[in-house]
Amino acid sequence: MAWQRRPADEEHTITDLSCDVAVIGAGTAGLAAERSARKAGATTLLIDESFGGTTCASVGCMPSKLLITAAAAAHSVAKADVFGIVVGESRVDGAAVMARVRSMRDAFVAATCETIDALPDGVQVRARAAFEGATTLRLSDGRRVTAKTVVIATGSRPKVPEMFASLGDLVLTNETVFELEELPTSLAVVGAGALGLELAQAFARLGVAVTLLDKGETLAGLKDEKVEAALRDIIQRDMAVHLGVEISVAREGDAALLRWDGPAAGEGRFERVLVATGRPPNVADLGLDTSGLDLDDHGVPTFDPETLQCGTSSVFIAGDADAMVPVLHEASDEGAIAGANAATWPKVTREERCAPFAITFTDPPIAVIGASAEDDSVIGCASFADQGRAKIEARAEGLVRLYAARPDGRLTGAEMVGPGMDHLGHLIAWAVQRGETATGVLELPFYHPTLEEGLKTALREICATIHAPLPSNRDQGNPPGA
Image 1 (tube, rainbow, N blue to C red):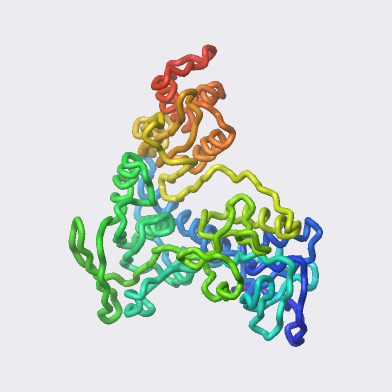
Image 2 (image 1 turned 30 degrees about the vertical axis):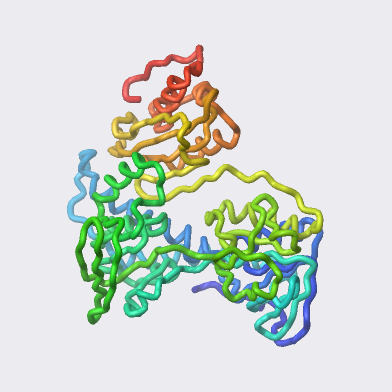
């Protein structure tokens, strides 16, 4: 990568260190925890082996969106004739696509590293850390750190099942896929969660022959069968999808041979295999067995999600390391909460968490908000297959399902797939967190023609089901094309 780094600390000396709050890991959660603790008046140390930038900037959110945006450009060209635009023959320059992904990725990482370099002198400690006691850390350079409190913010790592070992360099993960110099001609994607689904569709729309495989039965972890069915119809236009299957793998020269059995059986030869089977917490090498903490079945400390405190100890945990909600805004919030509580321990403050909210940046996007539907939930549906603005943009597809509670129609959650759901999802997440009812949201302005007014059908259905009032000062008809 192109950026230059200054030394993180005086590594040639072997001097034990002490501080109020020691933070292990300089990713999104760790950086937030250190800032928060220092703001609260604590002396801090931020310990990381590489200070190489956050997962989001280096191997997650940003490079994946760069690839997705390139795919969107290719897809727009391919369907330009719908609008009467004759493009002629087009070609995807795979080398140029990947070069831009890396160049822009490196710029995002460099910006993150500049933030790290701006930390006060002496805060950065370039080393690996492991517990040697409740709040004593042993560093890989021989030093020890004694702290009043510790924040674990070590993030997560790709999970590559042992069965893929025989494929050697044919295997890709999110930490290696963006280093491809050229697009492969064929790609098997194993794992139909958010990451696998995003990258599978992006590569497919860039001209790669993609097959998506998962032993699970659903795409993107969706629980609403009707929304998942709508999503599956969309995704299958771009690639072969095989869910509920068991796979076996073998290497044949420069190709990977995958066989699958389940609802459908088959096999295929692939130039590369992208393994997207999850990112477990990166806690295995922390020596947690010496920390005195209670660990769950996966070796992760048990903790209070409102304080991020591990039991009643002086150790806190934040971000992907706690395996609770592996998304950036939650990691940032958790870091801030953990850092502040670590600084004021033994006094800790319980913080109300945001409404659960996750977006998958497929085209169209997926948004999952709040709580899943319960047996007594009131459900409002809105199809975007005939929505006015979506039809104008030749993006008319998808389904919204809003969930509400009786007796007043208070919104509790949603699963949504369709055009603009990365934006509409925010509106519903805000409404859920604010405790809005379907009636209350309908009292707000809806401009025409927009994607947002497509939500009105679902909101009105909730009101009709529970006989909640519709706003008396709003026309209950729909303008043409709504």
